[in-house]
Length: 516
Image (tube, rainbow, N blue to C red; front, side, top):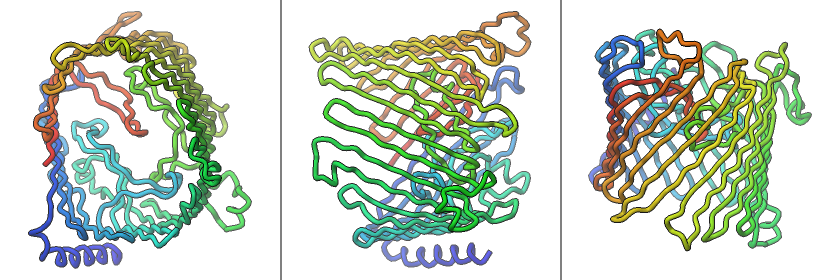
């Protein structure tokens, strides 16, 4: 309580200091409106109307910045409606650092201990309800950053949120969005010719009680940069984190199976048209609720691959990811990827395995501007979710047309065996784009997965299909509008390394993003 009062006092003091220069401030506003008419198949009412809106406002000068976020959600079933400010912040910044009070986003190291972030444009639905909200895992408190020469520091203290609960639902059951206590910081020396060293510490007190302490050390370097070579680069990064009971445990790199431990390393090579990256992970009891360890899984833009992305099991998983690329100007590029992971869902059960091999060839000869095509192949298994086999193939192409118009076509096929059930899925999309007017497209998906059968379908081998059409336009660089009509498939979607569930919809969805 004392700390929260202190935050409010600092916030009020900064606001008073802001007042004399407010007239000279620049103002930015971003508003996201998402309206839906319809519902998931078999859900009542079938003609549900839901409206969600999020507004972010910020005003800033050279020294001071202030902002707030307002969220609104209401549906015709009147399930957990709300209209309230979900964020507010004030920031003082200069050449040597910044101080921010209120809601903030930050990270320690590469996220093994702590990472707070939001995924722009993602609107989630509270499980079992019609209440919707924007995903945001932030920290409500104080953030201080500073730098002097090669030394930089970062310190934070506040109440975290998991970002997975609707404000309306939380209000109805008396659950605060931000709870517990998080205090942490890091010290970094560098970079000097691509080399830096750092250490981080964090104390976490969850709402359920108890306090845990963590520490991490990390190092980054480029041997070629140290040798003053610029024709190529080999960046190296290593980080080790431990939920420690003593400093001796940390230096021994082991503190027993009851403690959180995390290891992450990466390297790469960039040399002319060739590129290579390698990553390694070893996580044990690292699902802390406030962190986001690198998952080492390739994020796919293809429809069927994206919805079957492996979700990291930070409680127990170790593995690696390698990716190589070759690019030739005026011809195209080739990408090869291998991802692998092993771990236990339950300690007493055998280890599960995830393994994926991906290849993509993009052909775009400069002498043939009409040819721009990509083919890919993917073989995977993910025993964490019971998928013994997945084979996915696809092709996409882009054909330029007169008057600034182009046509894009995607076709994908996937065969799977999950928990002993074999089934096939397909996806196709056709999109027309105009450089000034926008785009219009139609998409199709089908599946023989028994788990996807429509309510009441008793067929031995049910086949379910989804059809949808989308129209989108950008108006004066300030408005982005899209209209979806048809059937939206429920399932996993992954954006910027974060995976979430998209709810099913049969109906109409309209979205308008406004910036000014």
